[in-house]
Image (cartoon, helix red, strand yellow):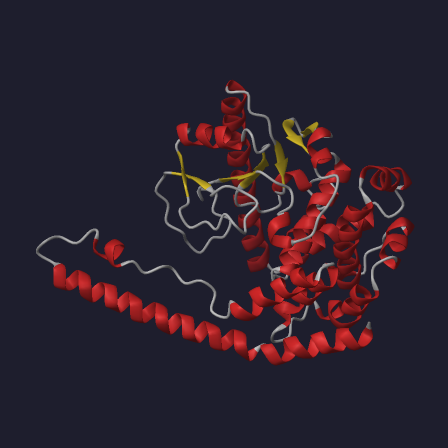
Length: 374
């Protein structure tokens, strides 16, 4: 809608045009704040010898988004090498940022998100320029222990980092070939975790379409990226082509044709329906994940995580934590609050489990069809 407004002027109804214009104005103001926030952090990093690259967000221009600074962005994502990422976190702490305590370090590729300690109340405006801007400090490009897939050559992403300048704004980023690789891996990871990252896939489709005749780029892609990485990258590429009908370079077609028969079957069974999710489709990516794994133990491990984690992990209820703010005059009230929370979490767990179990029949039907198609 934003692109349509910028390209076609007054074609939209007045109320829609006014609403979009307000969103655009808010996004511009927020991006100015993002630029200033990033510059302040970089000065702090340089003072203690911390290097970084920007990933996601505004680093996805050009190619993945049409106009610089008009892509809505929440946090600023940075990659820092593991040996300095804690130092970067210390810099942000000194600048007034605090860790978000709700963080699963096992699943994440980054440290707990760092948010500014400023008062703010969320409202209906998703593009509120006053919304606090946090930082995600990433310390790896791919979570191999969780994904159980080895990808060679990712350390070279850091070695090929470059200085970028767009409209007078400077930042350190990945080489364009590696930016594509990292974006594709993000889509694949989200897909395997049961997410449907439609906005990310659209950005990927736009990049592939605008680079579909760029022979020089794809020659570098073949030279820079290891076959194990290219094998994973072309899966999101094929998804983008299926969902949005984008053109792709012939070398992408060649690489896609080398995908295992099971993965080819997965695309035939699922990817055309991606924009119209059916009940239970969110877990289709689990079967893709299983098909990509080599060892039986890894395949069973992924399935066990999906089948046994029927209720997700509710917040831990700790009697000591529940009573830590209680005064000596209010022990009964504190105990009542604890039991109320315990009952609430129990109901949530049971209802959540029921929803997941209801999806199992379609999940297993897909697995059976893929097994037959191999």
